[in-house]
Amino acid sequence: MGQFAVIGLGRFGSATSLELMRLGHSVLGVDADSRVIDQMADRLTRAAIADVTDRDALAELGLPEYDVVLVAIGEDLQASLVCTVHLKALGVKVLWVKASSRAHHLILAKLGANRIIHPEDEMGIRIAQVLSYPMVNDYISLGNGDFVVEIEASAQLDGRTLGDALTTDPPGAIHALAVKRKGETTVHPTDQFVVRTKDTLILFGPLHYLKNAAPKLR
Ligand code: ADP
Image 1 (cartoon, protein in one colour):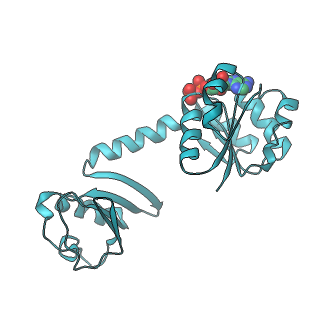
Image 2 (tube, rainbow, N blue to C red):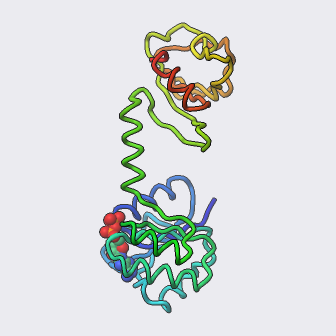
Image 3 (cartoon, rainbow, N blue to C red):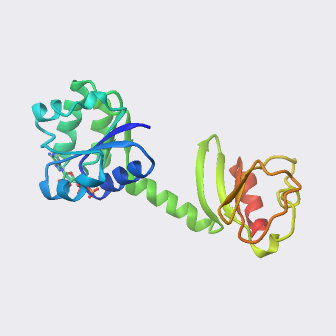
């Protein structure tokens, strides 16, 4: 279980905090707006009202104890930058900051943010990829062109074996990691595994091979 602090509980900060809680982590949420804190307080491990441009107020929150501190203030550029400077000075271990423009990104990089996030850009790219491969429910990029994708098996695949459905040239480029069927998961299914319509196939391989295989799996 990780310990996370999220500073700024706007749309992005609150969605991130609630998902971290759902995944079983501990989350401190901080915002200057008492109405926002009232709404979020009983859904987070801890919530605090503070103006994060105030160094003394920040120091009281014990932020260097947290695994990652995420600054999720997008609109108020000055508040985001001043808060970042203070958090670095306080010795926060890992600092992630949301950026709202290229200039914002550039300054955050100079201030030593460990990761700078552009949610709109990242989401836009993701949506475009999902739109262009509608058969893919979800995917994770592992770098170097390797992906894990989740595909729902079509009626066309019903009764065929995985070995038959996943033929590649050269063979073995795509690995089936798991198949989910009505709440039951078969981990590392063999080539002889018989696929049924609506099975969820979780596959690993280079994007190039997955792209060629995906239309055949529909
Ligand atoms: P989003 O686009 O994700 O909704 P916003 O930038 O609109 O993000 O919201 C950021 C949140 O950060 C708001 O809830 C706001 O109250 C909070 N916030 C802004 N400035 C400060 C500050 N100086 N100290 C603490 N919280 C702040």
